Length: 176
Image 1 (cartoon, rainbow, N blue to C red):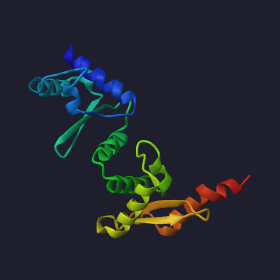
Image 2 (cartoon, helix red, strand yellow):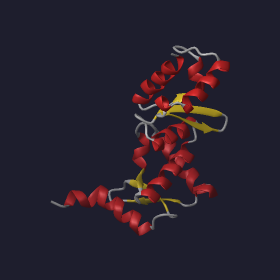
Image 3 (cartoon, rainbow, N blue to C red):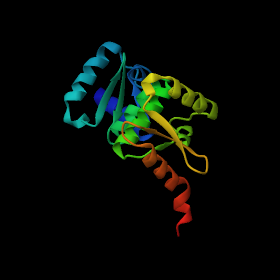
Image 4 (tube, rainbow, N blue to C red):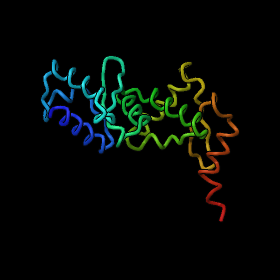
């Protein structure tokens, strides 16, 4: 019954677009003992009934989610946000978007959930990106309406990024 309680709890949290920290499984409403929790989680990982319950380990922390409700990419993003390093998280998102699609990422995206960055935080983030060698591939480009986008020059050229952001922000509205 405990495996079912754990999986149901993780699935319910995942339905809300969130991940579960391992420590949360030790607290209410589950109140599991730490010594038993590890064994139960091990059993669950080997059981086909719980194949949707996945774990991400980051540094010394573990997080769980249901792949029925949360994608792997989104779960990784939520774990990254747990680190409270907005600069790193933004750069990871920008690189992924630039590589996968390829497309630039609107800076305004990071004001929305789950990022919830303020104007001040985003301004500081841009300054940090410009200063830090680790993020030297992440560049800014602006549409003619002044909206700022970010892209990685590992995967996109500046003219390509500029053209795409101009289309999204300005040109698509000028076409019938």
